[in-house]
Amino acid sequence: MATALKTRAEEITDRLEKFYPEAQCSLEYEKPYELLIAVRLSAQCTDARVNIVTKELFKKFPTLESFANADVSEVEEIVKPCGLFRTKAKSIVELSKKLIDDFGGRVPDSMEELLSLPGIGRKTANLILGDVYKQPAVVTDTHCIRICGRLGLSEGTDPAKVEKQLREVLPMDRASDFCHRLVHFGREVCTARKPSCERCPLSDLCENRSAQNSVHLK
Image (cartoon, rainbow, N blue to C red; front, side, top):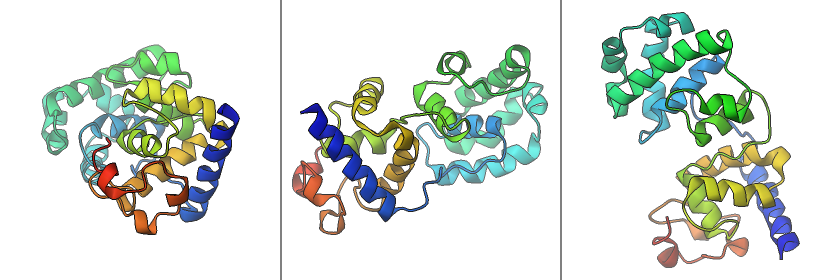
């Protein structure tokens, strides 16, 4: 059973690569710490809105040091459109200080060290490890959890448990890009409310082909 699931996961990965040849993070950034901040802002917010906000934010605070020395209220004012702005602004300033004090201004390259940063969880840490350091990573965002559940690659909605399940079946050298493709796929085809099963390249591999059934899955 495990072997069959791995084979199916590889076939799904192959097809998504053909469907989305370019596997890119939707968040715009130039420096590793900027990606860390952008992902922190993306919680309960769209990537499109985050990209608008970070354009102004990174212009106002062009260095990690400027973030570490920033008045939290100034950061709050800029990031307000992203929601949860007080919590996000506070953690952005705190993680910037910790990066300087504990890591010499460098974004760490291990899960344990990334999780020690204020406001950073496994989803963000995996994104950093995969995109910045090209390490095997599984980013279990809402698209990943929903789609992999529909495809029968994982069960449940707990991000940590889904990540563990996917690490057992996905080709891990391609897992990070696979997760980026799921974001585009989840926005354009396998949407939360009404998936477009009729134009899905994975329909014959999906355990929930019917949109009527899939609409209830999260």
